[in-house]
Length: 74
Image (cartoon, rainbow, N blue to C red; front, side, top):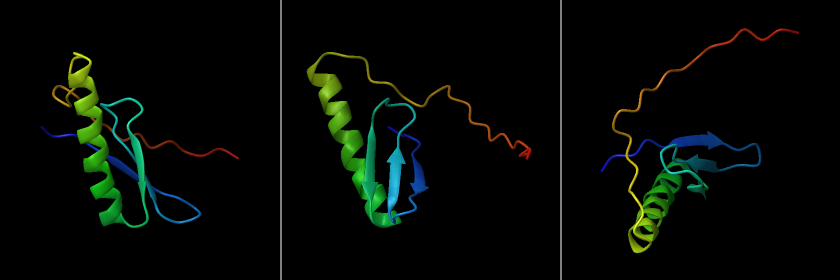
């Protein structure tokens, strides 16, 4: 299975990681590599919980991604 993750650099240091296809699946790592490792673990635990509760496993299949750029107005 493939899941997109987003890493956001935090002002106080480190990276917060979110998994758009898995609502509430959020983790953190001090560096990029640690953040990615933590994301793998968080995804595995999230999916394990869904399986245990007999819930559907969401995927990124059929998901389109766009980046919108907006002009900032003062």
